[in-house]
Length: 351
Image 1 (cartoon, rainbow, N blue to C red):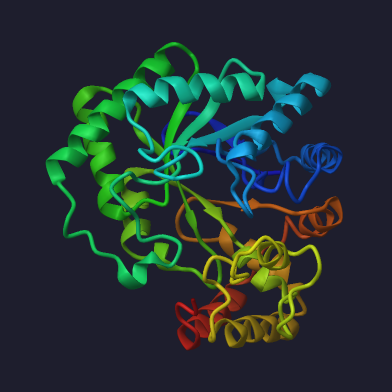
Image 2 (image 1 turned 60 degrees about the vertical axis):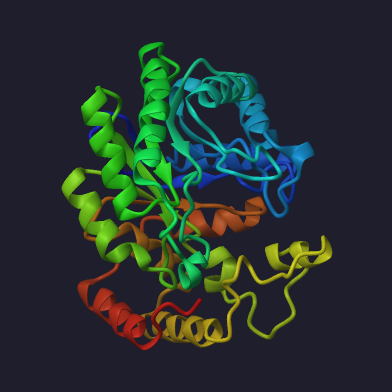
């Protein structure tokens, strides 16, 4: 497995990450541990989690369980030196904490994550959501930043980065990252960090896939020029790109089916739109023409962007993970990438 350094942090990780957001909900302890074993055997050493996980749904009583499962696996295998761990402090949420985070809260949440993970350090510590708001998760259609207070935002950043700097100096974290951020927000976090001598932004974890390419313009330019690595979540568009939702009725045990069974809309966070099926069909048709598995094509695309990008792959079961791993080394030809761009022009922003 190829290795990649996260931004300018010096932290090297596998070029693919294993996501753990289903661990403790759709994925039980035994299957989760087997998935981590499989990933490590395949050279995937980079694990992504968050204090709010598992999701679908997020429940107050399960907050932190995914971290605990990773910690139990680390303790049972004795392999902390073989893996890199990314986790996140939650943004504003009724299920975790309404206020999100500030410097004082982060001093507490880092220690809480370390305890659950049963480790003495976190390789990349991320801010799950900006406290000022975000356009991610389909909020771009009605995004309104007009009520933001610039100075309050900059003061908040300095407060948070002060706590991050303390944690890094104490050896509790190695690097700092963002999630669900904008180009403006990323640039300001970098500016403030440079001004106060705090850790520089190394990563940004935003949604990115064949169907979700908001990152391709301003954020990509910011990341290239500022040396920020994209950690791409939902690179299969929450399962849409697998084709399993073709036909309307979600398959049993799928993310949409579980959401429906627990009172949710089953729309995959707004991804199951009217235009999404046509876009999925077009990419599957292209994969067929190229003689490729559409799932493997989608992940390979995310790895071969003109900016530093690490896809986060996740699976409900080890059987699904085995299929993902089977195509992890696929490299798309220049012709294939051009054909993908043609499909994107025909089906832009399908959700």
